[in-house]
Length: 319
Figure (cartoon, rainbow, N blue to C red):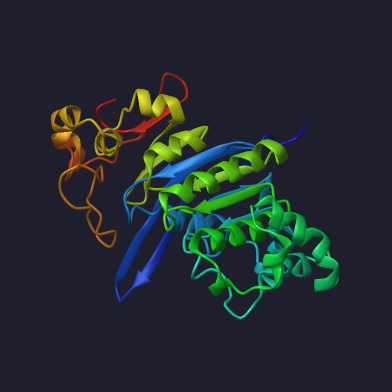
């Protein structure tokens, strides 16, 4: 029987030591599955653990606790040497196109590097047959191959980063805010490029972003993270039409509206207060310090993840 899920994450936890006795609770007990050929969007404020979650899944960081299955294979505690053959199937597009490309390498060498590392080609010359079509695929040309990263704009650099991730034909690509450093006009081009490639090749994306309207456009499912925990998870349309968790409602309420009258009516629907420190997260529900609906039990008991209407998961004492 073939496995329908390319990725299964169970109770994933990642803590970092900070100082002698302090621990940063970056990710705490996150669970979800991602089907082949589908996109799961992860949203939440800065510092809520989205990127730490992604980097732990792809094993840039070691796992503190929990389980990660890639296409049915348990990669949770694999050594980097054992992981290498599987890395072909999972690649990452990073947030910063300026920091994630080697300034001393040409574009050809940057895209050829993973092909040589995984033994798909023997040398840079052999790689050209795969590098040039991939450059065209991401909207660049063969002439760009001999140039260096600093000669490109941010949007062009991100296309090089995308080409590097896609050239291995992975089954899963983790997109860690791949458009947040780009101009709005370029963002749509990059998103459409990723969607077209997905439609053609059937790859899956774990898509991390701040822009909630963009996440709705690209995602089949959306997961909402707050202070290291998944507080809501459902189909994209369902979350936007029927948000259950007060935090999700607050996030959606903070999306800017072009109509000034509607914007004034909606002014007070955002989230008040600052996100607490992940070094010392609140007891009980972590959102209770900012929640307009908080009850006494919210500060004492951790809410269980419950399924409402079959597929809509929410972790909140209101349900």
